Image (cartoon, rainbow, N blue to C red; front, side):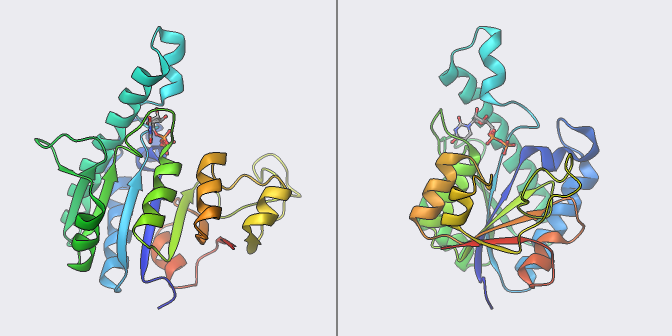
Length: 235
Ligand code: UDP
């Protein structure tokens, strides 16, 4: 199996489906079923989930909030998504365990690397909320960090397009999709794979980043099986 242990980064927006904000039940269940199918196919999975469907720190800046307070609200949004995904993956038939980088023991387990590895070794899908646990970061950076420290074979970055393009395919009909790129090529050609901090960490850790569309049904399973459309970014 090419990618036995993988970290999947899901944005909050992915869970909002057509609603654009909050959680969309059918979308949540479809993504959870996709994750459960990948687990049943023998993959060990950790999920890092964003919170943009509830709140992004930058949204608080014009509202009288300082950045650290606004980011705290953002991190709480990611934990809400982690709890929702935990339930949905459980309901799809695979045990899941939400863990938060910010301790809130009444709601879920605190994130600890060895515990996360242990859960995965026992067939549980680990769903990590709270990002890195610090303000001024994004969940993309949390995803690169967890993928590296959990020794994942790949970081699957779910977006709303099926890979990395030469230009924005939504506004430029001539944009071409890359099947494969190196980290250095992505940097020298100024191609946006993840935010700069996250990508620097992925490159430093030699992580393979797979950019794919979460909008396609069964996307995670087909990317892992090698049949889905995606861009592979490798050292
Ligand atoms: N956040 C943070 N530290 C982290 C990860 C996230 O402070 O390590 C906050 C930040 O305010 C961010 C929000 O949580 O805007 C939601 O995360 P993100 O924007 O990455 O979510 P996504 O865009 O993937 O839905």
